[in-house]
Image 1 (cartoon, rainbow, N blue to C red):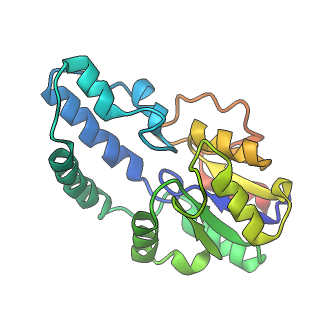
Image 2 (image 1 turned 60 degrees about the vertical axis):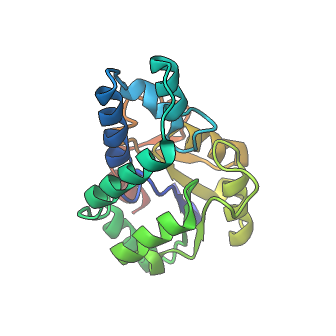
Length: 214
């Protein structure tokens, strides 16, 4: 394994944001007498509600309509409170130190907004570790479309096959492969049941990836 750049997804790879988000959805569904299994919810991981929407799913299950702006504002307060106490995912800091030492450029490529991604990276003190942060709005389409990864490859002035993508979602893997990039899949507790057999590499943690790069 000898990539010339590492392209990191953000949510669930660099910071465990996805569990806190899922918990608020699961609690909302439970409040209305419905279950939200991970196997169902995981469809929207790595993309947005245009891929699959928990809002529409709850409406379909209950036959009700909801005040989503109010509900999502309340959910967002709870999500941020739970994420605020977290550090970066296991192995992130050591992997970034290694990349700096060997001059391997790192890029964040996320379907989330710059406000979300840049804000958390800055809070964690990780923003200087990345030569680019590419988010929703920096390319015409988000994952599972390849546009964000294509933009990253373009900015790095490298071949897609030289850029190793680190993903935790099926939508992210689809996007990376459509852009021509190899994938190292590192699932988390939200995405651990996904079939990542199409990924070029599979690791349990970023420490395993670090060992493979060393």
